[in-house]
Image 1 (cartoon, each protein chain N blue to C red):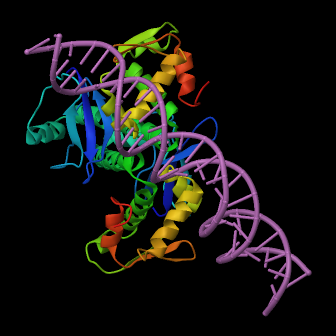
Image 2 (image 1 turned 90 degrees about the vertical axis):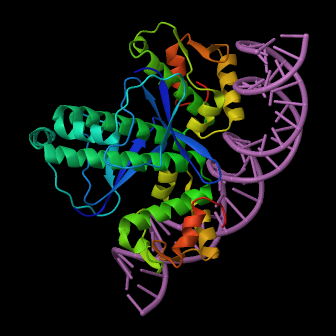
Image 3 (image 1 turned 90 degrees about the horizontal axis):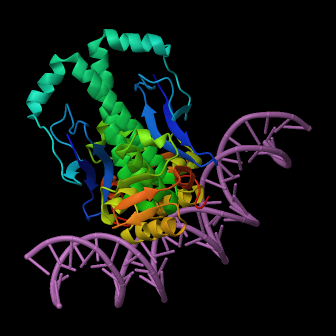
Amino acid sequence: MSGVVKLTRLMADGRQQIVGLQFAPDFVGRPFRQSSEVSAEAATEVKLCSFPKEVMDEMIAASPDLERRLYQQALDELDEAREWILTLGRKSAAEKVASFLLMIAENVDPQALDGDRPIRFEIPLKRADIADFLGLTIETVSRQITKLRKAGVIVVENNRTVTVPDLGRLRRRCETDAG
Amino acid sequence: MSGVVKLTRLMADGRQQIVGLQFAPDFVGRPFRQSSEVSAEAATEVKLCSFPKEVMDEMIAASPDLERRLYQQALDELDEAREWILTLGRKSAAEKVASFLLMIAENVDPQALDGDRPIRFEIPLKRADIADFLGLTIETVSRQITKLRKAGVIVVENNRTVTVPDLGRLRRRCETDAG
DNA sequence: CGCCCCTTTGACAATTGTCAAGACCTGTGG
DNA sequence: CCACAGGTCTTGACAATTGTCAAAGGGGCG
């Protein structure tokens, strides 16, 4: 209902990767399976509405409409996951951080993105989470944010609140190290 | 019906990333959308059975059973995509290549993986595609394959045919650089 | 036999990670 | 109200991994 949920995968030696972020009002869970390699964890305060797995599976079976909506959400998540695969596989650290900030902005304030007014939002993750999301280290994330700040692409308050004066500049940074 | 399809994403400057591989008899396409950022391309000879988008969308609407199957495939692809996000984000080049080989083996010969007999298969991609899949360069892929070969984890013929004498050893390499 | 594509290998450069130290921010207790 | 403690974030110096550029080695097909 509100908040941000991290979906994470953990390796035996402790390496961790965030494999998805979910924003309200997404459905969290894995229908048709008893368990999954993926863990869900609250990134912020989260309010949600939960059902026992069996009840959920029954509801899906009973309501084609619900199933359709879940199917569409799954397809959207798949699109996002693939977008993210491109980011992880082919973008530089600078581009990754810019892409992350843009993605957060898109989810926090979907409509404001069309206009070219300044945008302001809170990053719902700490540096360590951003690093786990981007496949980087905390230090690299910090340095890239500093670089964006010094270049005037973003303004940061309290390490969490970000203002983007010119969204176009941020967009360009998603595909080039310094445009 | 047969063959392997690459799903790719392209950046403006030409960087490319394979964001998914599909093996027969998967469904290829994006229901509910006119277009997608993702392109599909044959990696090997491919035979498939195609329908106009409208017909397909109608079939989905008419058959809950079909929709259910497609939903399940989407969930499976999502699981795979997330597995791959972990690989791209947190694994070393050596681990990536090992993971890739294991994934191919799993898709080519699902049952043989339980026993501990040697496994033999053809890699359906050339080095350049493997690199685009793993977010590496051709040269790095080549070096890592050489390393696995010299370590006796795999035997390679004609650059395409691979034999894995001991699957356990390959499995270990998916999470450690040299076990 | 020779050409073309793919692959391998080597030397070197660039990006990112590691380790270590210090700054900042926030809440708590004096 | 201030000082302190804890976690979080930034910055720097250096190391490791991976990328870049260049050249040479196969293999298949005309």
